[in-house]
Image: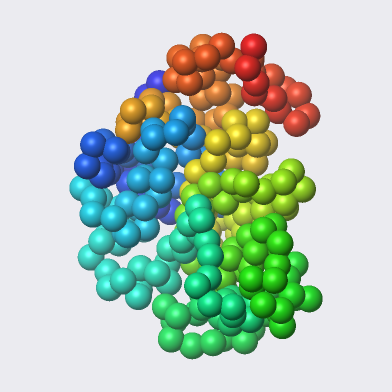
Length: 255
């Protein structure tokens, strides 16, 4: 499949991205109003790709936001534009939930009460704001960490397997919230989500396009119907795969 990209009209343009041997020569665009899923087996380079875009690991290549080189920006300015939701979030201290959400305002140097309240409202944690983060369930904490990112009002949200270890109800809730993050803004407002995940069926349901990695390289990029074919997935994951994207919900499973 042709994975040639152009930064014309792209929100985020990535070209020649590499991280050691874990990720090599990755190039793609993230469009305004889009959820782009990053898929692949364990060790394929998903986390490395997101970390490189976030600027938190040394990398080769270029990352541009609407034509501006993110690597040339001060870290505080980059953090205002790109929000990072890591795979394993946690707090070393027993903080109030409101204080955790307010951490999302650090790149701005303020505690914008309206932004904090809006993030709490969108993630449904208003009733939890006075509680301690370590007193919450894993699913509740996942919404708090997402609210922290949303409080920073980033243009691009990078989420590294945010539904790992969550039960089905919380998986759906988090994916709905990420979907709402882009759907709640006009396309020309410039919001997008880059989402690493393992569940191919959920990726087909919630992502506009998907990017498939294998051995640190992009092997396919397109709509779920274009990328998630039985032949390609069986080859990449080295197991026979059955794909039924016409089902509701879409289904990808072992044969």
